[in-house]
Length: 450
Image (cartoon, rainbow, N blue to C red; front, top):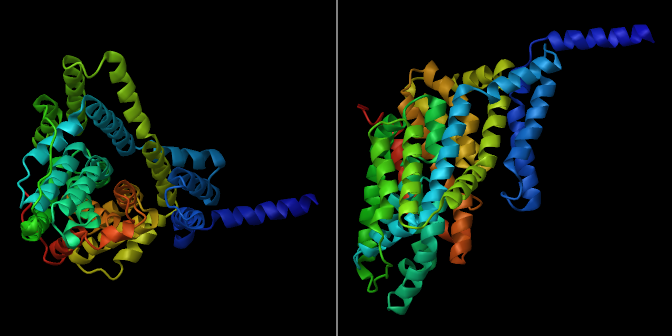
């Protein structure tokens, strides 16, 4: 019996010492996707299954299949990835962004911004104005979901007002008006300095947010202008005008300062810390906030980022296991085997993040999951990391805006009382953005980044 156990142990040691195949090394990633997808399909709800739980199970599986190391060494490898300096810096930014967004809402900054946008909307330019307002607000607050929550109820009311005012046709319907808000929300989310997608894209590609913004805006701004022009034409039949509440100009300061400081190139953590301080000062001086409510709002904002923080650490650890086992080298070589030149490399990054987004229904998680692979492709083919970050952010937002089970469309549909599928046909901006982003890759645009 003893000899039998020794023989089994020897065979296992020989098996453990053999190099791991590329597919096996990469298998924690499809295991995660299968757990999440199959569970979501069974539950018939992509948001009832916590992504963190799927990542945890896939991470445990990754640790189990790791070869040539003791259990302690495997856990150490996982912990090194989870505690990577870029992962931790991303987490700090998430914490500050959550605190800033929640305290800004507490002092009434979102309401002030919405009222300003509605006050300046001319009647026949209503659709274009709504789109631009959604762009500005989402870029200010850094979240497409937050913009949708703030503006879709207003959009639903405008649709009702248009119907009462005699404006008819599909352009006066609730799905169309809601789609305007959702499209603008993705524009701002794609460019915002405090958006989690921007943070994830720039950190994984190791470039500054200001530099990524300069490249990204040259890709998507023409798409936004074209869609704005389309809304001007479609709005020529509008006969009703929306009403706006009073504007508290002081409460607009935090958003304006955050955008200005971020564009100036100031470190994003310093930008968010400054914005958080302004929220407290304005809230205290206007009587909207006390020291206790400030701490409560800050804590709520940090807590709201809890799942994203956990997922970021689990994804970092799991990808480190995959990297150590040779999985990243395998997938990069597989993706780039037939690639000739930078165009093919950029298309592979776009396809990679798009596929991940389709599977996870979360653009931030898609970027975090594929960011390190994209970074390897960028270095191997000498791509500009600013362009790579822009591609990841843009294509993830594109896919997120076209899947009916995404958080943004589900939220918008719920607030407007319509189906998420009914919105997709009117989402002009994501479609046009995708065409311009694809064209930027094929035509090697923009040619100058500085």
